[in-house]
Length: 77
Image (cartoon, rainbow, N blue to C red; front, side):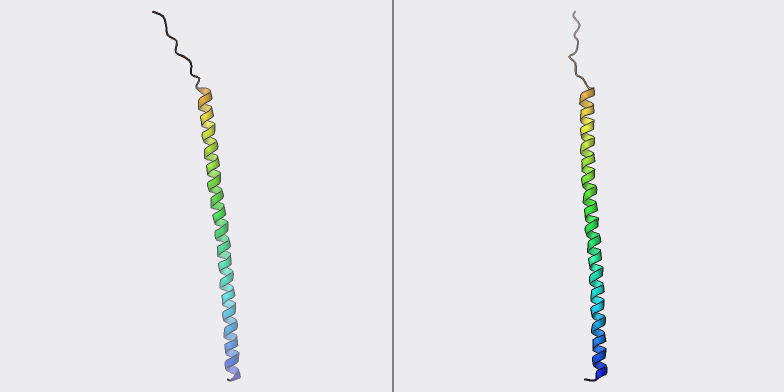
């Protein structure tokens, strides 16, 4: 083989390796962002559930403590 062809092939392989590394880096970044987004979503869901449960408990206790049931008074005839 001519030295020019070998140098050209080596340069081509070097560019291909660099391109593959760049793609791998990009994929890693995208996966990291997706994982972070997923965690954030689950945190919002969990926080919403906790807030809803606390609000329901407050409403329940507020209604049961303010409504005092007394026996009706029957007037004699």
